[in-house]
Length: 191
Image (cartoon, rainbow, N blue to C red; front, side):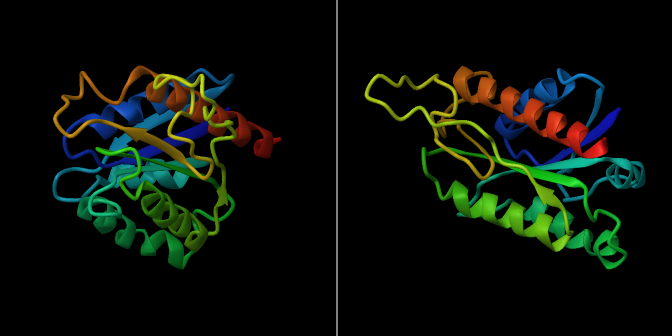
C-alpha cells in the first residue's frame, strides 16, 4: 500500500478541480490510498492533516499561480513546513507538484520551481509528469500535456471561466495521468 497525500490551495475552485483529477488518477494506481487536503482561506490545515502528511509516502503540492508564484495561503503553509523540515520528517518521501493559471504561460513554471524547491528543502524525491507534450501541428487543445510541462503538472483555466468550465478536459486527463504516475512511482520506492 502506498499512501499519497495531496495538499493544495484553490482560490476560485479551478485548482480544486485539478487536485480532484490528480486524486482520481492516484487512486487508480494499484494499492494506492489517497488523501486530499485543502489549505483553507487563512492558509491553514488541521493537526490531523499534518499527521496525514507525516504518514504519507508521497506528498503532491498544488497551488494556483498568482502573480508568478504560489498563492499567499500556500506560502503560509510552506513556511509552516519548517517544523517537519527541522527533523527531516519528509526526507525520502516522493514529492510532486501542480499549478493552474488563467493564461497558457502565466509564469506557471515559476510556481513549479517554487514547489520543487520546497520539496528539495524537505529532502524529497521529485517526480515530474513523464508525459511528452502535444506540440505538433495536428495538436488540439484537449490533447494530453498540451501545456507542455515536464517538471510538474500545469493546467490553464480562462480568467472568466467557472470551475465547471476550466480546467479543460485535456488538462484534467493529464492531471489523472500525473496522479497515477506519482502513485506508481511511490509504489516502486516502497519495494
